[in-house]
Image (cartoon, rainbow, N blue to C red; front, side, top):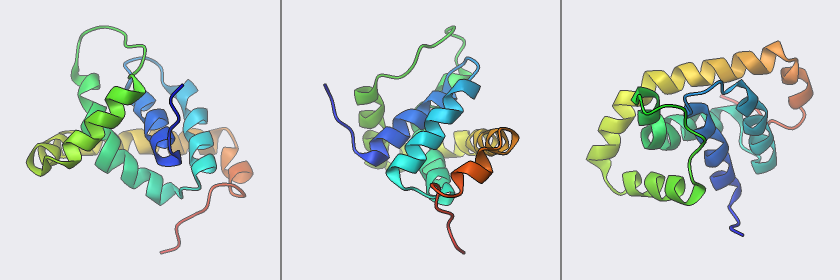
Length: 129
């Protein structure tokens, strides 16, 4: 069985937001991964926009049918590959930036709608700017 770092677990949870199915059930796993990893909302948003969206955002532009999920080893390798190819990563990020921002807004709205904001304030550190 593979073991993943807290950041890798968060990336895996965030990737589920890019499935072409109803992803609202994935929101709880994202919040859980954030809490377990100790990432703030701002840090999680940066990971979503810079790492996960460029790696898997293409899935929402595909018409291949319903997708069950991304294999964790493939996902993590794809993220690392794009980090090593700045130009390719730049174009992937440019294509998915607004999509990732929309995903983030939906995720935060879900947190507020379900009252998770109050419950999770104890476990989700906020970035102080």
